[in-house]
Length: 185
Image 1 (tube, one colour):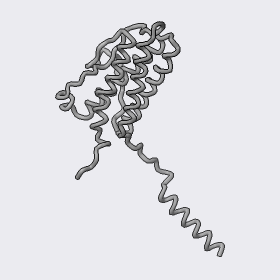
Image 2 (cartoon, rainbow, N blue to C red):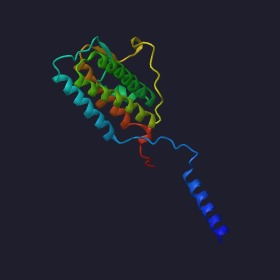
Image 3 (cartoon, one colour):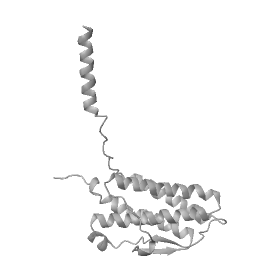
Image 4 (cartoon, one colour):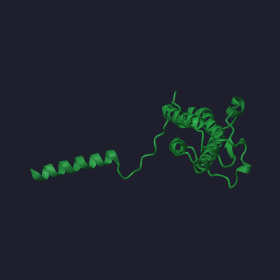
């Protein structure tokens, strides 16, 4: 009887292991819920508001290259998904570089948490893009070769670009992501 019970437990364990397949890594599930992006946009706005109210120790030490935030929908729609993704990823990379410089320039410690949070959120957005099977971005050796950029010299302008880029091109890319499209056939 003990042998019979042992075999039954063994069969049950094997069935459970087969069902869960612990040896196989499951693919990263796509993150398609725009509430995640909305949360990042809200925090970017909070950083912008905090910067606007800052009076001392909140300047950018040098001008930085940032992505254009204006979207020409005719041009955007004509781009394929890879081109759109590269444009968004290069913009995220530029913003991360600019926010890192801002972090070292700002002496107002109250702003450090906002800037750190903005940098973390950009990294999280990159993780969201990876979950959507969007190819990893390789940054260029120089920002001179990047198209669709401009330079800002104030911290408030930088944070305004950050908010607008998330609200514009990042949102458009996530809305159209192939991994998030429902199969309607």
